[in-house]
Amino acid sequence: MNHRQQRFVLEYLQDANLTQAAIRAGYKRRWANSGNVMRLVGRPGVRAALRAEMAARARRTGITRERVLDALVRVAFAEIGRVVEWGPGGARLRPRGALAPADSAAIAELALDGEGRIVTLRLHDKDAALAALARRFGLIDPQRRARSPHPGPLLPAADGLAGGAGERALR
Image (cartoon, rainbow, N blue to C red):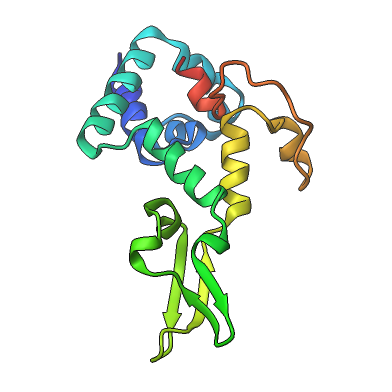
């Protein structure tokens, strides 16, 4: 690998954006936007370096595909009824022992009054988590999504974990 290709690998790790990584590594914008970057990622040395760097980062941080998917699932399938109980005095947070870790992980914001009643409760964005899972599992056509604010048709998942273009290029 030449110096620019090595720089590309390091730049890609910053934001997982192939085009921007190529530009920051010194490739011309026109070149990076024309699809050449996919050929660059297809080079055996570049592909191997990307895989090695990504695996090293995953080991260092403990972030794995499974942990990310688990976090998305917690948010996407959270139900407020498992977090809150309603009674004559209003809504109250369920007792700490009654909250499963998956349910408490879905809470984005919580404020209680002096008597333990909920003043503010906001869960993480379920739509965003569901959309991320749908993309991950190949349920949304990424080409149609780019042209329209509405999700594309449901498609069968090729391998159960279809990711973005950059991830597919690394396979």
